[in-house]
Amino acid sequence: MPTTTQILLVEDNPDDVELTLRAFNQHQLSNEITVVKDGVEALDYLFARGQYATHDPRCLPTLVLLDLKLPKLHGIEVLKEIRNNPITRCLPVVILTTSDEDADIVESYRNGANSYVRKPVRYEDFISAVNELGMYWLLLNTQATPRN
Image (cartoon, rainbow, N blue to C red; front, side, top):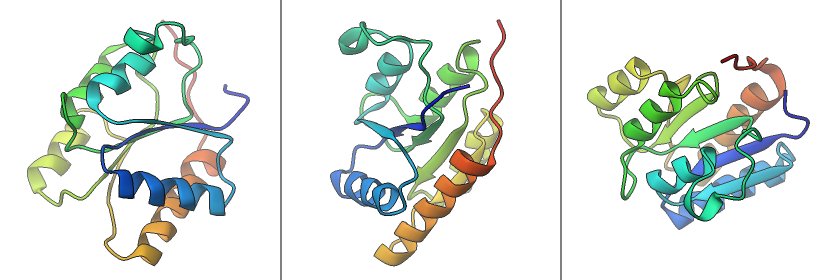
């Protein structure tokens, strides 16, 4: 189990990154938030490749907040890679996206998403949604320890 609360935020929209960081800071829910801007960078971070080659791949985040509409590699493809690796298979992944397409919802759950949350448009609603996500996934949820 991780000793600190760490989040991997996979988001290419700088405004959404800022809002999410503000919400977590406002509610003091996380010790560390790592932001990556595309799907390839997310996988590089998780599997200690590329610019993250010196990162310890055993130091997994407590939670991944994953957008779907990402450059380089779509969020569903990132999710598939996470679920196909024994080290990251049990990692909680919450899809946090603007998409309300039924196909995206179905594909997210079919490929192992733990939750699917549409980003609220209003600032106050966005802050509230991120706070509730953090409260549940970081404080209430008990995370599984992966076994090879």
